[in-house]
Amino acid sequence: MAEQAGNVRPAVLVARRIFAETVERLRAHFDVETNDADDEWSQEELIRRLQGKDGALLTGTQRVDAPLLEACPRLRIVANMTVGYNNFDVAALDAAGVVGTHAPDVLTETTADFGFALLLAAARRLTESERFLRAGQWRRWSVDLFAGAEVHGTTLGILGMGRIGQAIARRGAHGFGMRVLYHNRRRLDAATEAACRATWVDKDTLLRESDHLVLVLPYTPENHHIIGAAELARMKPTAVLVNLARGGIVDDAALAEALRQRRIAAAGLDVFEGEPHVHPGLLEVPNVVLTPHIASATVPTRRAMADLAADNLIAFLTQGRALTPVNHPPRRRG
Ligand SMILES: O=CC(=O)O
Image (cartoon, rainbow, N blue to C red; front, side, top):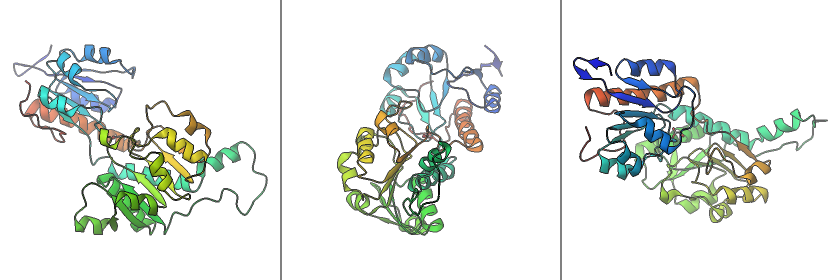
């Protein structure tokens, strides 16, 4: 192992393929093992690769739980390059004295852009009409050909009003002249509400009054299936649902059925229960736009996310202070 100023250099695992420049930055400080084949390792393989590692750069899909932490006694920091961190058992991190970090802020605006892309695509039947054209079925102009739902001037509902929810609210209010309603456990302060031109309502009102409902809340056990058959039944039959948050927030089977029966008009989904598996019922209905978890996927934003994870590893392992931690373990390892 290489030496730095008489000390052993920390060792870091990068669990999936990321940008070469980010790996180079890590190599300036650490011994780095990468996964250039971009394999999705089993938990056993991940644990094997983490032996002797002080830190790991993760992509939000690797589970970090008590058995892993117990099996990797040298590990001191796990750095997600995603903002979501439902792959971490935070109580287990605290108990093991391991710091977890995530990547907030750097993806907010890009993800909000994509939220609107999905909303517009679902409301205006973009992919459905493109499939029709590509299949050679377009014969003539018709007055109601792929007539969809209006977007400007309608009511935008946001469930989960964190950074991304607020960025979507600003786009809706200022860009599309929408009335913005939101529901969040904690109400925003008055200045933030005014900047977003957003009004807090209870969840039931949000479901009943939204023309377009965007989900941007974190996945937690309490949020599991927060949108299921009962909630879908309360929405307008003309409503559009967008899930940018996490699989498991929506009961995908219930949503497929609601879309099939046209109990809501359309949906735009970037995340799925058990992804990359997609509920077969969703693949069968035309009135849903489906994308493979790419809301933050622009090159500059994915670079910024990987760089923030690397910066967390560098700051923590060289100076003892993580930049964007999700926990503050009472007693730290190492
Ligand atoms: O899903 C993406 C993220 O959490 O950053």
